[in-house]
Length: 129
Image: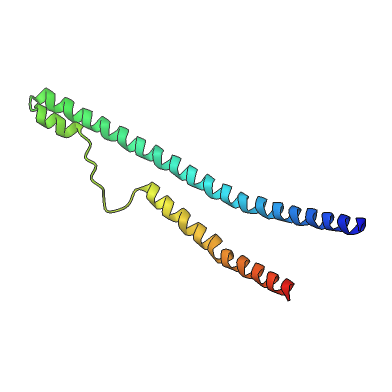
């Protein structure tokens, strides 16, 4: 009886070790995907800040020039200073990165998702028979 319990305990420890190993492997992939997403987001944010700073600099130069020429009025200044949020034809870089990440995750994990469940079902059926 004692040997059976020891054998069962050892078997459970081995099973737990295998499960932890699989968890570490899978979590490593998720950490990589998360790191890529964060890095992409930071790059997109930096690009947007640089573009905005450049646009603001150009706007200030135009306002200064119009003011020197005496052509600046309040309505024109408001039009130049207000940010028009017109979206272009292409999505923003962050949206592209999100789509890329989702496509990568789909290709990486979706085929394995169903094959693991099928293997577990086959094992449980063979264990019951």
